[in-house]
Length: 477
Image 1 (spheres, rainbow, N blue to C red):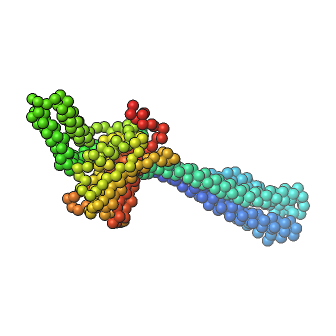
Image 2: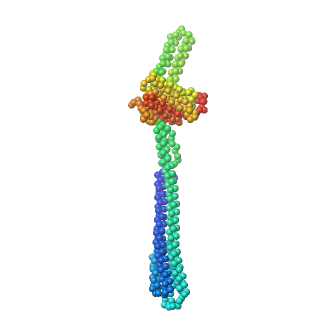
Image 3: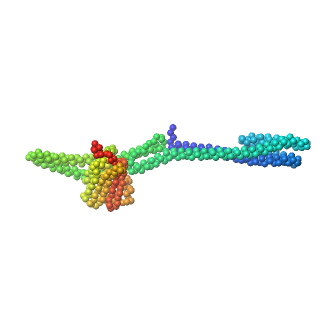
């Protein structure tokens, strides 16, 4: 049977309450015993004082034979018996009860001896044997009274020591239990909540890696499973968002692509017209040359359409070792129709820089950044520079895309990667481009940062994992 967190917490607090009640009852029991024994000690002290008075008057009587001393001795003896009579009910369940009985018997025996000695004619006969018995019994009474006090005081000390030991053990056990309870609460509640909190922040930045599900069979497991379902749904929506953004980019690129296709189609049409006009009296070399031009223009148009199709096609995320230069050049070629006159795109990427990339998604990254750079340059001339270099010491490649545009205000730099944040005019952008870029870079286990100064331009810096041992031929294979 597996208990859920609520049941575990209730069980823990019930056990804690039970332990506290148990300790409280024992503590009360010990304190009550101490109170009773303190009362016994007080009475035992009184008995000892009474016995000393009995012995004092006994000695006086034996020395001087005064009736007054005899009466006082007998009065104190009766008083001692009365004190014992009031005490016996309180101590009948205590260990001292047997000593009280012995004390009472000795006291009665002493009273009897004293009575015999006081009979008429006894003093005159000088019964030395009876006096010796009386003194012996008197000494026994004194010893018993002292032992009673010492015995009860020792028992009080033992109870106090036991109580202290019990309270110490209880405190240690309670602290151990609280530590265990804190461990359970921390492990089962606080730690999963902290993981969920951190994962939520990570998801907000575009990383949709699910949480590991532990077989705890409680609320935590169900929360994590529900959270992972939410993450999967968010990732699916993110992919839909990326595809929607891609379609939006295609819409922006359509006019320029149509213009790019128009040139090879015009060349093909012109070559065909020349061949038809010169077909009857032209030589084969001339026809071959025209047809070769047609073939080249067809290939050119095919490459343009192929680039569009590859960019728009939906694919699973897949990393492959490919030259970074190919991805950047395809991106520049796709966006070239959107570059206004007076803006130059400078590409400085080594041909042999091989990275593990999802080419389609990285193309989306570069298209977003290049489009932002183009829109940031309000006045021409302007330059957009795309550069890359390997950093083998840190096992990463550093890619920079910088422009000479208007820049980003300092107070907005920390928010540029937030979803739906945009510095563009209303209707000019959704604020999703850089958020998607951030998520794609995170998926590649990389990092992206931005530097900007108003009026001077903006630089995006991308750092991606780099393996210096991967050579171009391996990628080509």
